[in-house]
View 1 (tube, helix red, strand yellow):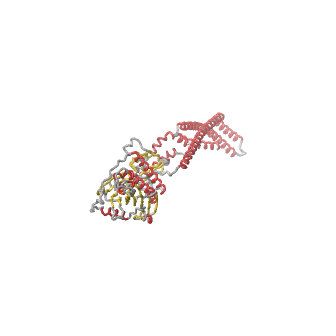
View 2: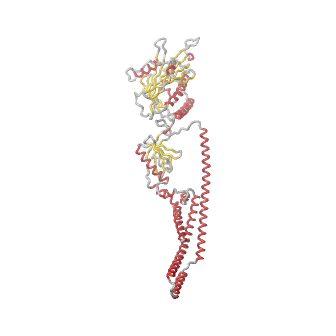
View 3: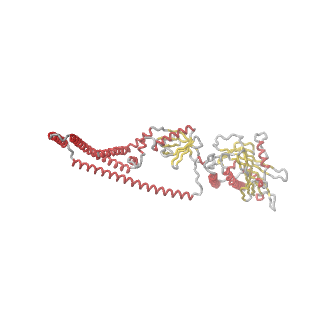
Length: 606
């Protein structure tokens, strides 16, 4: 019975070794298995919108999902040239956007693709195909995948690991050869055990039969019967003795086979120990590498001055922007500073051609029958009515937000149809220019790009009269805010004094209008709405020995600048306040300096 138990143990080991050998030999067919694994998966290609960067935004790209990867090309025609990027779907994170029904994201580690389909149904189709490829690539799609991604504690894992490099592949083949040797020894051992088992079974059968026969005989049996039984037993023993096993030879063979098995197992253990040592060294190197990366990352975090703002679409202006108000303002502030520096460099390189002042404009040239005549006059009269060059009345009802020398900037909060806006009013005094000159350069469209650094393009759409025009302009993109444009009428007026005590004003009023359609080539932007006025008053203070000749040293210009701007979109109100507080004094200072430089060597415009 003990021999049968030993035989059962060896047969169990044989089944385990055969499965291990099959797994090892299966590593040679891994490439074919991978091809078979993806052969039943659907391939998908088509055009999707992909987020490129905050400058170019969403762009159409040709996307291909095949063999467990997603790749994109600039267009279908350029697919033969080479892909722009590829991501393996085995460990990719595929997620649908929370608010946008057409958008989904594919990311792995720090690589993140933002994609948009034409419809929600198309998005579901793409995501379904991506999930199928991900399951197949990650090892949950087929029996072959399960074998390729087996446990690291099993012998089957040595085959999948052996494909990682040439050296590990050779070690895997050496282990496979030793297992085949063990199988040969095992077959020999099985045959020896079977021979011994058969012989001992026959002997046990004979002894059992003789014992039973002897117990049934009585004491009165004759000596002849005993002799017959002895003769029968002797005959049976001689018969089995002729077929007896060579116990000495079998013992030697058994010992040799067992020794061969033990030697081969020792070699296998040595190979696996070497493999374990190699993996331990690799793990130590990875731990050391990770420690260096973590130290470098901590060093970068400590040296950061401002938070890094990501450039994805989730961080742009919108109802679901992931930026808080402080981060939003920091991003706009940094972009405005960069634009200002670029404008300063550009002004250093270019020579501005001086223009002669135009002839004096009449008080009004717009025909009374024009559809905008009443609106323009009403708005201009309203600005003149509330003009306060000394800011005495303004200080009582407005809040002072900035003060620099003669310049003071005020604000207040106004509810415009349920939306809170923050109109500004600024007063300033400069010497050496007239109110006419200041208003002319603020109104003249041909010089606007020379002093307005935030504009990308400006174009006069229609001249309503010699002193009134409709202009369309596109502002530069200030990330993360969306790009904006504006269409407005602009008029310049001279308001002479009605009596000796009345002031002499020049005024430029700019007001948003929808009187004309937008140009067809205008980019898609958020429309800016505003009501802006520049009012200027000239004061002449002649010197003691004045000979009647007008000189610039005797000129003083009082300025009132008012702006009621609604940026539209989803810019946080706190950001609007901060930007206005920052930009209004800077604008007024830069513009007055521009006019002073522009008129320095020119005839005085009274």
